[in-house]
Image 1 (cartoon, rainbow, N blue to C red):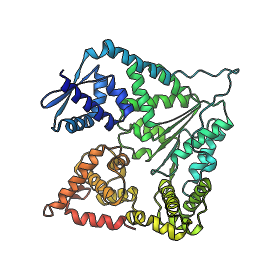
Image 2 (tube, rainbow, N blue to C red):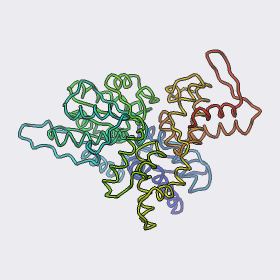
Image 3 (tube, rainbow, N blue to C red):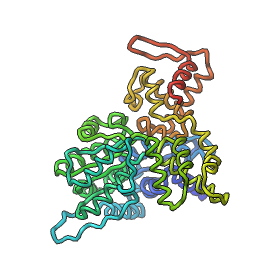
Image 4 (cartoon, rainbow, N blue to C red):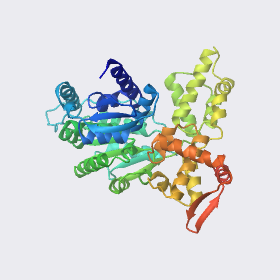
Length: 470
């Protein structure tokens, strides 16, 4: 390979790393692939079918985009087995990865009476800092029960709700409280993505037994963003066995997700049934009084003097989630500091004028989804599924288009909410609806229990927008 070609491949690898993240690039590309650039295609050499299949399913778009950005021409991506990847230097590089996996998935020893208490690292959030209101009272009470009892009468505890409503706070709060009250308890708190990455890397490195010992020999397992397991069949099967092992040992599992188990697309029936066999609790967006309490607590933590009039103004105008509330409060505080003025209602209005204008009226994805599914006569689970019938495909496209138009959420965020879809799916859906809008003479058609329906896209969007506007 010439020096020029080598430089291009290095640039492509750097571009891929930027797109997939340094950690994923280190695991899947740096020591496990070899790129060969030809005239109209790029060949990705992989050591075995498993790694090739994983990269093809998860990173093909990123590879294609990276090559196109560097070479300024479209190419096809082809995968091929490269036996040389397991020889010489490549073998030593993979051994270093194996050492990393061995350390990160080391077996958890059964505790002996003479063992000292486990010292878990304290996580950020605590239960005593969790502001409780009507919207989250049941979830908070269930979390307190998990802390008080080594094994509750419900297993798992499944907490779901929109982004930024406090699910992660509850999970971390449980960990911190258990660490203080029952220091001998072995617990693990990871995200669905961490569980998946550790499982795949352990499988790749031949360290699956260590992985299973670490996750199954725990007294309390907490998984955040468990919807990340959607469409990952092997990981779902592994997690099902992990859950069964913990449940059989009379231990506790706590899960958190953006959606109800039945609303998570591409989730196996076995997992859905397991999840709903315990206690499923929804956290709603906080009501006005709770929003005010959250803001007051945050001002105390920041040691700032914010008048009630400013707090109530923020709480009245920003209703989506806790993160948005806290972000608005920080913006007001920073604005007052930069203008050398005391925090007041006038300062709050001035600081948040543009932000409130962009987010008013407030529309939530759940509102859009409910309106769309009702109109087309399907269920939210259909939108979250991988079904591609004409009716479901049209409804899904309309929902994604309205979500992009009426919310500030990004393409990946919308895709994740609607069944863990790829961001490219959302982009194509929006283009599809824009295409219908550009061709007003052609109506869209879909099937209903009463037969085929036909209607132009504009009246459909107008009807849906009137039902979701506030």
